[in-house]
Amino acid sequence: MPVLSARSRGNTITLQIIIYLIGAALADLFGAWLFLLRKRWEAEPLRLLIGAGAGFLLAVALLEMAPHAAGMIPTAPVWLLGGFLLVHVVEHVVPAHFHYGHETHSGLQPHVGVTATAGLTIHSLLDGVAIVAALQADSWLGGMVFAAMVWHRIPSGFTVASVVRAVGGSPGSAMLAAGVLGVAAVLGGLLWLALPQGRWLGAALSVSAGSLLYVAATDLLPEVNRRRTLLAPLGVVIGVGVYYVIHLGFGH
Image (cartoon, rainbow, N blue to C red; front, side, top):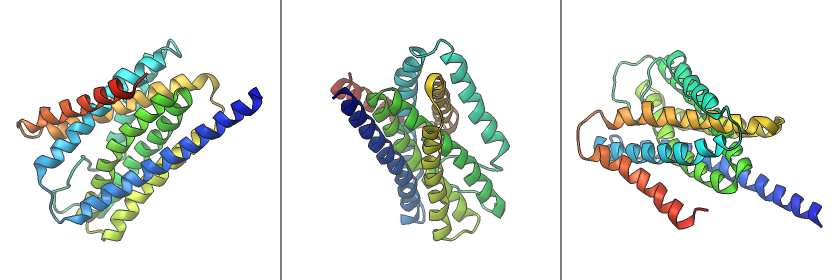
Protein backbone atom coordinates (compact mmCIF):
# COMPACT_ATOMS: atom_id res chain seq x y z
CA MET A 1 0.00 0.00 0.00
CA PRO A 2 2.77 2.59 0.80
CA VAL A 3 4.35 1.76 -2.59
CA LEU A 4 1.12 2.59 -4.35
CA SER A 5 0.82 5.81 -2.36
CA ALA A 6 4.36 6.88 -3.28
CA ARG A 7 3.71 6.02 -6.91
CA SER A 8 0.51 8.05 -6.85
CA ARG A 9 2.36 11.06 -5.42
CA GLY A 10 5.01 10.65 -8.10
CA ASN A 11 2.36 10.63 -10.83
CA THR A 12 0.77 13.75 -9.36
CA ILE A 13 4.09 15.61 -9.35
CA THR A 14 4.81 14.50 -12.93
CA LEU A 15 1.41 15.79 -14.05
CA GLN A 16 2.01 19.08 -12.24
CA ILE A 17 5.39 19.42 -13.92
CA ILE A 18 3.87 18.92 -17.37
CA ILE A 19 1.07 21.41 -16.66
CA TYR A 20 3.44 24.02 -15.25
CA LEU A 21 5.94 23.75 -18.11
CA ILE A 22 3.21 23.99 -20.72
CA GLY A 23 1.71 26.92 -18.82
CA ALA A 24 5.06 28.73 -18.85
CA ALA A 25 5.37 28.14 -22.61
CA LEU A 26 1.86 29.46 -23.22
CA ALA A 27 2.72 32.59 -21.20
CA ASP A 28 5.43 33.41 -23.76
CA LEU A 29 2.97 33.03 -26.63
CA PHE A 30 0.38 35.10 -24.77
CA GLY A 31 2.88 37.90 -24.26
CA ALA A 32 3.76 37.93 -27.97
CA TRP A 33 0.08 37.88 -28.88
CA LEU A 34 -0.57 40.85 -26.59
CA PHE A 35 2.16 42.83 -28.36
CA LEU A 36 0.72 42.03 -31.78
CA LEU A 37 -2.78 43.11 -30.71
CA ARG A 38 -1.85 46.78 -30.97
CA LYS A 39 0.61 48.73 -33.09
CA ARG A 40 1.63 50.86 -30.12
CA TRP A 41 1.34 50.30 -26.39
CA GLU A 42 1.34 53.07 -23.82
CA ALA A 43 4.52 53.09 -21.75
CA GLU A 44 3.01 53.70 -18.31
CA PRO A 45 0.70 50.65 -18.14
CA LEU A 46 3.61 48.51 -19.34
CA ARG A 47 5.81 49.90 -16.59
CA LEU A 48 3.11 49.14 -14.05
CA LEU A 49 2.88 45.53 -15.25
CA ILE A 50 6.66 45.11 -15.37
CA GLY A 51 7.03 46.71 -11.92
CA ALA A 52 4.43 44.38 -10.43
CA GLY A 53 6.25 41.43 -11.98
CA ALA A 54 9.54 42.64 -10.51
CA GLY A 55 8.01 42.94 -7.04
CA PHE A 56 6.47 39.49 -7.19
CA LEU A 57 9.70 37.91 -8.47
CA LEU A 58 11.73 39.58 -5.73
CA ALA A 59 9.34 38.34 -3.07
CA VAL A 60 9.29 34.76 -4.34
CA ALA A 61 13.08 34.61 -4.78
CA LEU A 62 13.94 36.18 -1.41
CA LEU A 63 11.13 34.90 0.80
CA GLU A 64 10.44 31.47 -0.69
CA MET A 65 13.25 30.08 -2.84
CA ALA A 66 16.32 31.34 -0.98
CA PRO A 67 15.18 30.26 2.52
CA HIS A 68 14.04 26.87 1.24
CA ALA A 69 17.37 26.30 -0.52
CA ALA A 70 19.28 27.41 2.58
CA GLY A 71 17.45 24.75 4.56
CA MET A 72 18.60 22.11 2.08
CA ILE A 73 22.30 22.92 1.65
CA PRO A 74 24.70 25.17 3.61
CA THR A 75 26.27 26.50 0.39
CA ALA A 76 22.98 27.91 -0.90
CA PRO A 77 24.18 31.57 -0.86
CA VAL A 78 27.20 30.63 -2.99
CA TRP A 79 25.01 28.92 -5.58
CA LEU A 80 22.56 31.83 -5.50
CA LEU A 81 25.36 34.26 -6.30
CA GLY A 82 26.48 31.90 -9.05
CA GLY A 83 23.02 32.00 -10.61
CA PHE A 84 22.99 35.79 -10.44
CA LEU A 85 26.41 36.01 -12.13
CA LEU A 86 25.50 33.39 -14.73
CA VAL A 87 22.57 35.41 -16.03
CA HIS A 88 24.66 38.58 -15.86
CA VAL A 89 27.35 37.03 -18.09
CA VAL A 90 24.80 35.56 -20.51
CA GLU A 91 23.01 38.88 -20.97
CA HIS A 92 26.25 40.72 -21.68
CA VAL A 93 27.71 38.12 -24.04
CA VAL A 94 24.79 36.87 -26.15
CA PRO A 95 22.28 39.68 -26.93
CA ALA A 96 23.56 42.58 -29.04
CA HIS A 97 20.65 44.78 -27.92
CA PHE A 98 18.17 43.92 -25.22
CA HIS A 99 15.77 45.41 -22.72
CA TYR A 100 12.35 44.39 -21.47
CA GLY A 101 9.23 46.08 -22.78
CA HIS A 102 8.33 47.70 -26.08
CA GLU A 103 11.28 48.04 -28.46
CA THR A 104 11.20 51.63 -29.77
CA HIS A 105 14.64 51.93 -31.41
CA SER A 106 14.72 52.13 -35.19
CA GLY A 107 17.38 50.97 -37.61
CA LEU A 108 18.21 47.77 -35.74
CA GLN A 109 20.06 45.11 -37.69
CA PRO A 110 18.30 41.76 -38.34
CA HIS A 111 20.83 39.85 -36.23
CA VAL A 112 19.59 41.74 -33.17
CA GLY A 113 16.37 39.74 -33.27
CA VAL A 114 18.35 36.49 -33.36
CA THR A 115 20.67 37.40 -30.48
CA ALA A 116 17.82 38.71 -28.33
CA THR A 117 15.93 35.47 -28.89
CA ALA A 118 19.07 33.47 -28.10
CA GLY A 119 19.64 35.35 -24.84
CA LEU A 120 16.05 34.91 -23.73
CA THR A 121 16.21 31.24 -24.74
CA ILE A 122 18.96 30.67 -22.17
CA HIS A 123 16.76 32.46 -19.63
CA SER A 124 13.97 30.09 -20.58
CA LEU A 125 16.08 26.99 -20.05
CA LEU A 126 16.89 28.18 -16.53
CA ASP A 127 13.24 29.00 -15.89
CA GLY A 128 12.25 25.46 -16.83
CA VAL A 129 14.81 24.08 -14.37
CA ALA A 130 13.49 26.44 -11.69
CA ILE A 131 9.90 25.27 -12.11
CA VAL A 132 10.77 21.58 -11.88
CA ALA A 133 13.32 21.92 -9.07
CA ALA A 134 10.91 24.00 -6.97
CA LEU A 135 8.08 21.52 -7.47
CA GLN A 136 10.36 18.62 -6.53
CA ALA A 137 11.38 20.42 -3.36
CA ASP A 138 7.87 21.39 -2.24
CA SER A 139 4.49 21.57 -3.93
CA TRP A 140 3.68 25.01 -2.46
CA LEU A 141 7.06 26.35 -3.54
CA GLY A 142 6.52 24.91 -7.00
CA GLY A 143 3.21 26.73 -7.31
CA MET A 144 4.72 30.04 -6.23
CA VAL A 145 7.66 29.71 -8.62
CA PHE A 146 5.28 28.80 -11.42
CA ALA A 147 3.21 31.92 -10.71
CA ALA A 148 6.40 34.00 -10.73
CA MET A 149 7.48 32.47 -14.02
CA VAL A 150 4.16 33.16 -15.70
CA TRP A 151 4.32 36.79 -14.54
CA HIS A 152 7.90 36.99 -15.82
CA ARG A 153 7.38 35.14 -19.10
CA ILE A 154 4.50 37.22 -20.40
CA PRO A 155 6.84 40.26 -20.62
CA SER A 156 9.50 37.98 -22.14
CA GLY A 157 7.15 36.97 -24.96
CA PHE A 158 6.08 40.58 -25.38
CA THR A 159 9.73 41.69 -25.54
CA VAL A 160 10.94 39.14 -28.05
CA ALA A 161 7.97 39.82 -30.33
CA SER A 162 8.69 43.55 -30.09
CA VAL A 163 12.34 43.09 -31.04
CA VAL A 164 11.55 40.77 -33.95
CA ARG A 165 9.03 43.23 -35.33
CA ALA A 166 11.46 46.14 -34.80
CA VAL A 167 14.04 44.47 -37.06
CA GLY A 168 11.45 43.91 -39.78
CA GLY A 169 10.19 40.45 -38.89
CA SER A 170 6.64 39.38 -39.66
CA PRO A 171 3.96 38.73 -37.02
CA GLY A 172 4.45 35.03 -37.68
CA SER A 173 8.17 35.37 -37.00
CA ALA A 174 7.40 37.19 -33.76
CA MET A 175 5.12 34.37 -32.60
CA LEU A 176 7.73 31.83 -33.68
CA ALA A 177 10.39 33.53 -31.57
CA ALA A 178 8.06 33.44 -28.57
CA GLY A 179 7.39 29.78 -29.32
CA VAL A 180 11.14 29.11 -29.22
CA LEU A 181 11.27 30.59 -25.72
CA GLY A 182 8.35 28.41 -24.65
CA VAL A 183 9.92 25.24 -26.05
CA ALA A 184 13.20 26.13 -24.32
CA ALA A 185 11.42 26.37 -20.95
CA VAL A 186 9.88 22.94 -21.46
CA LEU A 187 13.22 21.47 -22.55
CA GLY A 188 15.02 22.99 -19.58
CA GLY A 189 12.55 21.40 -17.19
CA LEU A 190 12.64 18.01 -18.92
CA LEU A 191 16.44 18.00 -19.09
CA TRP A 192 16.65 18.65 -15.36
CA LEU A 193 14.05 15.97 -14.75
CA ALA A 194 16.14 13.47 -16.71
CA LEU A 195 19.27 14.12 -14.64
CA PRO A 196 20.01 12.42 -11.32
CA GLN A 197 19.03 15.14 -8.86
CA GLY A 198 19.80 13.95 -5.33
CA ARG A 199 22.11 16.38 -3.62
CA TRP A 200 21.97 18.87 -6.51
CA LEU A 201 18.36 19.87 -5.91
CA GLY A 202 19.32 22.53 -3.38
CA ALA A 203 21.97 23.89 -5.73
CA ALA A 204 19.50 24.08 -8.61
CA LEU A 205 16.98 25.89 -6.43
CA SER A 206 19.65 28.37 -5.30
CA VAL A 207 20.85 29.05 -8.85
CA SER A 208 17.24 29.58 -9.91
CA ALA A 209 16.70 32.06 -7.07
CA GLY A 210 19.81 33.98 -8.18
CA SER A 211 18.53 34.01 -11.75
CA LEU A 212 15.16 35.42 -10.68
CA LEU A 213 16.85 38.03 -8.52
CA TYR A 214 18.92 39.21 -11.46
CA VAL A 215 15.93 39.43 -13.77
CA ALA A 216 13.89 41.37 -11.20
CA ALA A 217 16.64 43.72 -10.01
CA THR A 218 18.62 44.44 -13.17
CA ASP A 219 16.24 43.71 -16.06
CA LEU A 220 12.78 44.67 -14.86
CA LEU A 221 13.37 47.42 -12.27
CA PRO A 222 15.54 49.59 -14.57
CA GLU A 223 12.72 49.56 -17.11
CA VAL A 224 10.32 50.70 -14.40
CA ASN A 225 12.71 53.45 -13.27
CA ARG A 226 13.19 55.01 -16.71
CA ARG A 227 10.70 57.70 -15.68
CA ARG A 228 10.14 59.11 -12.20
CA THR A 229 6.42 58.57 -11.83
CA LEU A 230 4.20 57.26 -9.06
CA LEU A 231 3.46 54.16 -11.12
CA ALA A 232 7.07 53.00 -10.83
CA PRO A 233 7.11 52.23 -7.08
CA LEU A 234 3.39 51.48 -7.05
CA GLY A 235 3.78 48.56 -9.45
CA VAL A 236 6.59 47.01 -7.39
CA VAL A 237 4.59 47.39 -4.17
CA ILE A 238 1.56 45.81 -5.85
CA GLY A 239 3.65 42.83 -6.90
CA VAL A 240 4.98 42.31 -3.38
CA GLY A 241 1.46 42.80 -2.02
CA VAL A 242 0.09 40.11 -4.33
CA TYR A 243 2.72 37.73 -2.97
CA TYR A 244 1.67 38.43 0.63
CA VAL A 245 -2.02 38.04 -0.20
CA ILE A 246 -1.32 34.62 -1.70
CA HIS A 247 1.02 33.64 1.12
CA LEU A 248 -1.30 34.72 3.93
CA GLY A 249 -4.42 33.33 2.23
CA PHE A 250 -3.12 30.01 1.00
CA GLY A 251 0.43 29.53 2.37
CA HIS A 252 1.64 26.91 4.76
